[in-house]
Each structure stands twice: as structure tokens, then as C-alpha cells.
Image 1 (cartoon, rainbow, N blue to C red):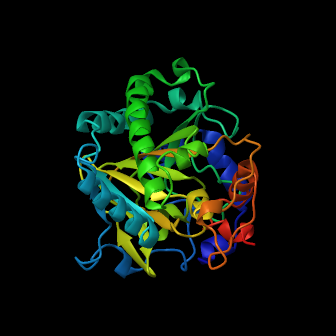
Image 2 (cartoon, helix red, strand yellow):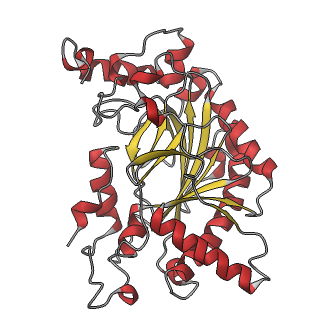
Length: 362
């Protein structure tokens, strides 16, 4: 732990002072700082090493899967299902092309996110909140008061659970968000079907589990950092979701932990990044993997990404556990059954600290 973090200041007070500005990390950058505040200093153990900043061998790349022609070409579909099975089992991440979403829709969502975060602080402050019940919220670091070190990013998010009024979405984001949501959910449905088939289940199986009933969209803004080697854009973590679908700009910085090595998820214009969430690893009984990933802090920017989280309803009373059709004497359940809300509460009580799956092991 850096000395500045370990000694000599009241972290709780500085966290509150930062939070009370309601201006986020963007506000710090706009103020002209050349040194990052101590609350953003990460421990040496968590910070990237020099070998983590790219330079990956060309043979180590996130799988890229092309969905083109899978509807009308049965052999092509079988090949894609096999590719998704392998990527989900060995990487937990893959990039999708040929998904059918116009590039303009993705670009407009990125630009609308930029416009929101780059408007005046007083306008953004109107929806600044840490209330998890709010369907529309802007903040910096959802786990600001739980984490040991803050991340160098701000976020605006929307919970689409059937009760959100689109008119509550800020005007600068509204049209792009609703168009983006419509297209992304279509891709999400297709991916859930392919994942069901990849598990050897009927195509509608995961959808029948309500795996994508609730949708949370979060739009991250990572301002340029004056001391990027001392902090992170997002600390290493897994997602507490069934599935996450991400669109990112061309700046880079997203990394996935693969066989003990951090691998860059190189931006590919028009592609979507898909990753398996904790809940899907759990119900698949570890056939598919939810892997740790992180975002580097960068000296240039801003970096912008937009993620759609697909989940069951948090108030669903059905117990979730390993899918019975996947179990046998040779493949017994690795996890106990649970309520989704219990998993979510446990995950968020710990902040971004890796995976929560071990807590639910049998």
C-alpha cells in the first residue's frame, strides 16, 4: 500500500468531500489537477505491471465470432454454437461481429454518453445519487464508500425493469439510449439462444429462466488521468450478471485475465464485447466461466464504454442453482441454490473485489 494511502489522512472524510462535489472524476480533471487524490491510489499488488500494458503475443487474442448467416445456414449455425461453447468455457469473453446492429447506432450511443458527461456539472448533479432504488442515476464509483481505492471513472445508468419512464432519461441521452437498448436486447436474445444450444439445452432454455428479464444499462466515462500508473479505470472484478454486452470506443484499456495473464480486448469498430457473468457460470455448473477483467487508467481520453447487464428480476422468488439437466453422478452440483437478490446483495456489499461465486459453493 503506498505510504500516502496508509498514513496521514482521513480517507473517509476525503471520500465524502469528493462525493459531495457531485462532479465526479471529470470535475477533478476540469479543475486542472496534476496529481490524483489519495483516495484513487491503488495498492502496488493491484496495479498493472509494465508487461500488462499491451504487447501480448499475436497468438493470444479474444475470440471473434461472426453471427452472419446463422439463421439460414444450418452448418454455419453449428459452427458458431461450437465457437461460442469454446469461448465461453475457456475465455468467458468474446467479440461479436455480424450481429446486425448498424454501426451508427453504436456510435451514436458512445457520442451521447460523451455529451452527457461533458455537459456542465450542475446539470449532471440533478441526477447524482447513491440510492440503488433510483432507476436513473449518475455517480462516480458505486462502491466509493466500501472500496479500498476509488476507480478513475464516472457512470450514468438506467434500470429497465418495466417501471422506468423514458422521459426520466436525460434529454441528451434519451433517443440514443432507447434505440441502443432495442437493438442490444435483440442481440442479447440471440446470444442466449446460442448459449442454450452450446450447453446442449433447448434453444429457449435460458430465456425460460428469465435470465434476461431485467436490463441495466451503464455508460462509463474514463477521463484522461495525470498519473495513470497509480490507479485503475476499473479494478479487477467479475460481473454479477447472467450476461454482459458491451460497446466500447477505439481507445482500448479493457483487459481480461486469461491463464494468469492480462490480455487486451482490442477495440474493433462495430463489434460488441460479450462476457459470461457469475450467474451463468453458476447455473452452468462451471461449464461456462465468468472471468476477472479490468480497465486501465489512461493518460489520454476520455475512454467511453456502454454495457448492458442482463439479469433475472432481483425480486424473483424462484431459487437458482446448477441446471438439473447438466448434472450427473460424474458432474454433481458445485453450488447451492439461492435467490438472485441474495447474490446481488452479497456481491455489492463487497464492492469490486473479484468474484463472489465461492460464497455460494456447496
